[in-house]
Image 1 (cartoon, rainbow, N blue to C red):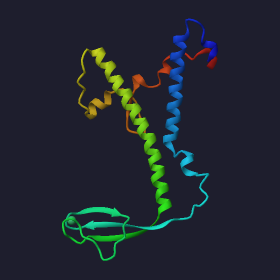
Image 2 (cartoon, helix red, strand yellow; image 1 turned 45 degrees about the vertical axis):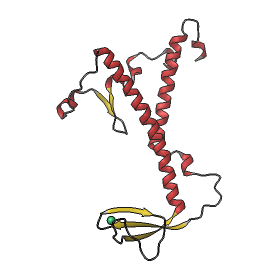
Image 3 (cartoon, helix red, strand yellow; image 1 turned 30 degrees about the vertical axis):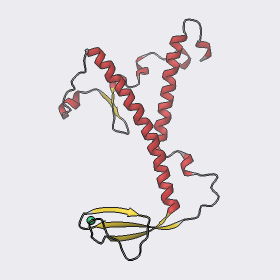
Image 4 (cartoon, protein in one colour; image 1 turned 135 degrees about the vertical axis):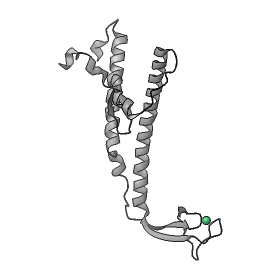
Length: 181
Ligand SMILES: [Zn+2]
């Protein structure tokens, strides 16, 4: 990359390196999203990995038709706020196993959140540019099946986002740089 930083070419090479870095990051994110990051599955510093037995109780109020769970074990039953004695189902759990699921899902949710924040920002920017082109916010076509057929969508990403053909892999529109041949 350094050999590109000649006087007068700085701006151009900056834009190109930014674009490729963004692409690399996007690829890395897609890979992370596709599977759990390895560090959430292997905890190298955990020496004691025995099961932690506990009880989780599901509570059902047949009058209000509401469900909730509690970690509190209570002998002799308990009453819902409506005055009805709730039905209880006690489940034996391994707290460590459940925590493993919770932590892995939180890690995954964090990755998804970052992706969604970035996607939202990207499409707000796109709408902003389109608004500049049109002079005002363009009213969208109604999303009927017939209209959908005529929208240029390159792909539906794993989150259900419709990636516009116009924005999809812009690099393919240009000849490859000499060094990649
Ligand atoms: Zn109730």
